[in-house]
Image 1 (cartoon, helix red, strand yellow):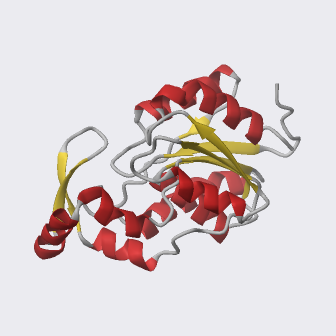
Image 2 (tube, rainbow, N blue to C red):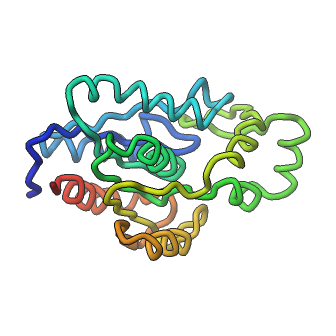
Image 3 (cartoon, one colour):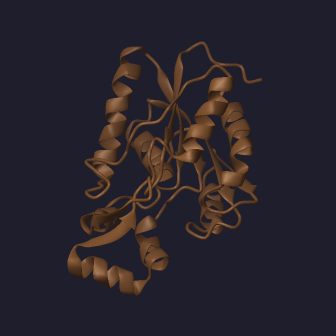
Length: 221
C-alpha cells in the first residue's frame, strides 16, 4: 500500500486522441483509484472541439484544471495516454513545479511523424487538400477534423523533457506508437522508468496492471 505524502496531491487522467473523459480505460482507472479512496479527475481535452482540436487549447484545459489545485496548495500526479501522454509530459515541462510524478501510457511522442504512417499518404493528401479528414471521435461519431491540427503538431516539441520522476507503461504490440520509441526515450533519461506490457496501443487488457503500477508509483513521496 503506497504511503501518501503529507503535501496534498491530486490525480488526473489525460485522455488521448479521438477519446474523451468517458473513455472505457479512463473510467476503469478512475474506478480503481476510487477503490483506494482516491479521485482521478478526467478533464476534456477536446478543445475547442474534436473537429477543431488544438494542442495549445488542450494544454490550456490543463491550466484551467490546475486553478483549484494551485489555490489549495496541491500538486499533481498525472496519468496520460497516447496523445494524452504527450500533453501530460508537455504540461509538466511547462509547469515543472506543479507535477510531482507522471505515468505515461504508450505516450504519443513525435506524433507529427507518425500521422502519415498511421493514416497513409493518400489520406494525408486528402486531408491537406480538403482541409479536413473524417475521423471517429471518442463516441465513434465520424467528425471532420481540421488539417490545422496536424500543422500545429509539427510546431510542437516532439519529445517533451519531463522534469519529474516518470513511469512509462508501453505495449510491446503497439501498432500506433512503436515500443522502441519509449525504449529510446527512457534509456536517455535517468529519471524515466519503462515497463513493457504484453498489449497493443489501447492496453485495455492491461488496465488492472496499469492501475496497480500507477497507484504505487504516484503514491511514493
